[in-house]
Length: 453
Image (cartoon, rainbow, N blue to C red):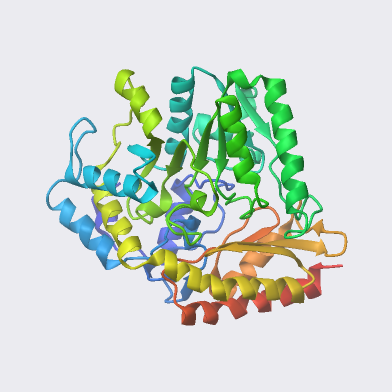
């Protein structure tokens, strides 16, 4: 890059043009239109024309405490003035503090240590390696309705179509997928059929474990609550049933908390909504709210003890990155001191009834799901038959048009397949939430009139 470009203040059009020409955009065809963002503050982002947009998805469900929170920004500045980075073999104050804070929040009666990573995919990748080392087994069970990251092992473990490119040379050995319940799409009704669905899917999972030989299965890896595939809430008793199967066959339970963790559901960690304790859980995103990349793997005392006698064959140059951990300390402290989990439950009292109203009112909303500020709506073409607007791995322009219509109203969010996710920053106020949600109602009315049977 020339010196003139390095020092030049670009226009929004120039930023977008350079992005289209030189940036490899993830999960997109290259060279497509892109919105240049100039700044962000609180729950809002601003383009170069001065337009304001509400970030109603916390970007990729990571900006949990909003944008430019002074406490995190100041912590980064302060640490940068002292020491930005120190190698993993050395102890640093932010890393040591953050590890203890996380273990204490998870429960230091059961958990012991944290292995820090660069992000969520790295976290799941290393959790898989640890499970195989500890158990001496190779097979990893994971759900079809899941996403665990785009590195090799995390991608193999993922169930949705984003794993296909990784499997181009052949499906991965020792990764086994099973179908997890999605009550609405499976033809059941939440609150009525939970017991039946739980029994059915646990029976299927146990049958599959037996056919695969449970003595060969190292771990069952699951999102505590399925995130990117539509905030799929497990039926009552299902997670406890999976935990019981793990105990029965000596299999480790790994919970992926990358998207659902850090107060998103109204609990510090989403697995705390169930009567379980995973042997390992992974995190990223909300631990620094995306200000600096950071992830991690939290392990039980039993697993930690194993690695006091055996070498942990996991390593990353930036494991426990000093600047990232300083941001993490500030973010985690803010969650606790400001009772963000409690605030989230209060905001659920606004968001959940609104989504239930949308489900009752609109032909295009088949089902809504909400826990804390983690929510999604299933968009359908026909409510009576439950025909999805965009079935799995099919190209349907309607969903893109819905996102575009929301964006035109200053409401930024995302969705996959047939779902529209609403996961705003956890610091959103009641007034902000009530100001933004009517835009969804307006767009759904437009969808009813133009795209539904």
